[in-house]
Image (cartoon, rainbow, N blue to C red; front, side, top):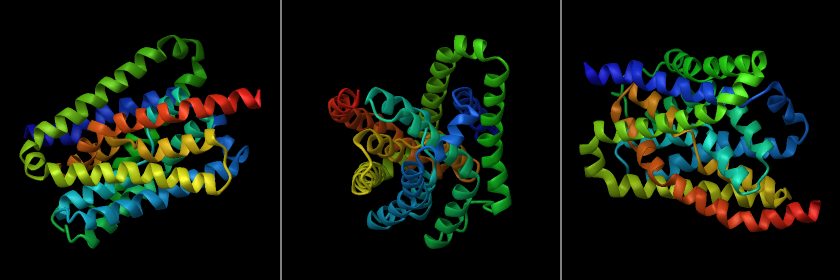
Length: 290
């Protein structure tokens, strides 16, 4: 009963608060910006929508993950970027505007991408016993915990911008705290599965994290984007919205949450390391541009 309550109410409510916090940081201009630098946004979104999920499928198969954990890794790979990617991009002096735009668009597109890849993964890995994965049911879940709270947050910012500016720092701290609780709760709830599969899950999650960042950065540079744009795209691919993967996974089978929870334990380390590596390089680019 308690597990059902957590999966159906607590985790979705926590994610809704996190996504509403994201909405408070967004304006309509963040969506329109796709027309300002379409090449950067297009490359970033293709990486998010195609490259990351494809890597998740390949890595899950390579590491021989059990069906439920393999599906959980794909669920993570299909999730959009998160607000932490925006923050790390800012600290790395990357293109924060591009990062925010990718997060905004990919979070809304998750209504389609997450259910589609989840359904495909269930078929590919033969995990037919994980519950109701009907497209309609998963689409509704994702819509209610992403698009609706983001829209509410944007509306609140539009109506009361001064108030939002005064409370936003506290809202961001609350979002980070809730994210931490979601991760810890997921690990505690399925600690036996974590212990039994920690090596494979950690290795697969780390491989997804590092490979996605490396490939997306390389693709960005090959497309002749500057270092600041490449930094934003790489961090968007390396710091997924794991809380979305955990909330959706918990609503089906708790084991699906494990890859995202384990991933969250070190994505900040690799993300901060990459941000630090790019900081000086991007600083030189900003000075030169100025």
